[in-house]
Image 1: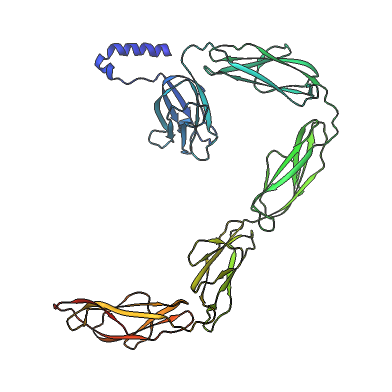
Image 2 (image 1 turned 180 degrees about the vertical axis):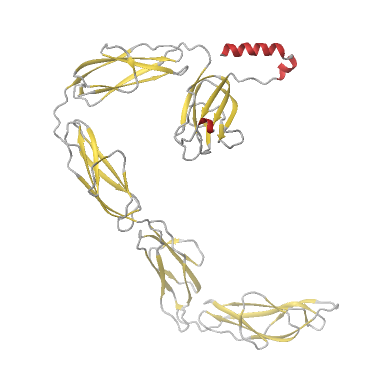
Length: 518
């Protein structure tokens, strides 16, 4: 095929003008194609070998390649894991309706070595592989091949009952094409899996490998002896561990996972079995997840290769439904109070939380809008003034309660009989007759060693009204205003008062003034 392509290229060169040849783009030496379908565990097809040089990378994920669900996949080259080439920037996203019928491509320059590729879509993590790029020249180096013998041994190093021979081959250029082995001069056979030798006596396993360019490694061998396994009368040791998220009573929330482990120093473990809630004995291969609410009993046992069966073990546990209800949390404020309900000297805040599901994990509080702090003992607040304590609790399932609040006022010990110091004043523009034009704004402030509870004002003999910010007064006419303050001990200041007039704006000159109340 390459010869045919080369011939066609030669014909094209003869027909294309030299000026066109000078600007013609380079043509990729090879095309490597990956395909994907409905699977999220493996690509449908993928190359294993390539030659260094300009290469067209093709990724097809279409109905033609088996994708009947319009599922997206990527072909992404690994550019960070040590041991691989990182010089090719490939990240192709393809799906049947992507506008290109699921076929994407680009050109890169590959260099000798090994590349790793994968699908970057979440949940497709096992769609991964690698391919080897040779330098494009003739490969005259045979593969490297090794063998390892494993199995239980006696003090002399002989294998008890059986030995397992594992052969490993590698070729950095054209790649390994095949591996062969020969047991005790019985002829070479293809090696596909570790070779188990159980015949009693001395043995030799020979092995060799061939690469894709036909180079054959030197034949190597490994010798060993298999002897009778001593009689094993000791059953395996087997244990179980139950894990999962638990509530305060030790119950498992939603799911309990039981992991069974068995060991046998004699003939080795052959099987592990478990029985859940009196059901049938089932081969154990992976941890057992139990998510049915209620009490459970899991029995387990193991059998060794000599037929010895362990005593049955038992794991008892309870599964409850996942807790989605937050804790209930309350707070109580205690301490000596005065006649106005203020706490004299200090106040103590006690927070209590309960949770009938998974149990309370943490309790926190926040004093006067500060940082959330772990609650371990009642909170004592001795600073004079008004306070707010926020509180919340979190259970073992992660549910967080709504924030509750407790408000209270602390006043000095020994009694506070001094009223607050209060000041008030009016601001605005005045005309030549000292009348306020359009509006006058009331301003007020107060101070008290025990803390100010409130500031109030009364306009034109009306009801006392809470003062919280500068208050504009815009009704035309003559007005009387009063201001007073109350501290946290209930002491009320003397009234400040003043009289003023508001008129409509005229063209006369205005003066900005501040008029104090007396």
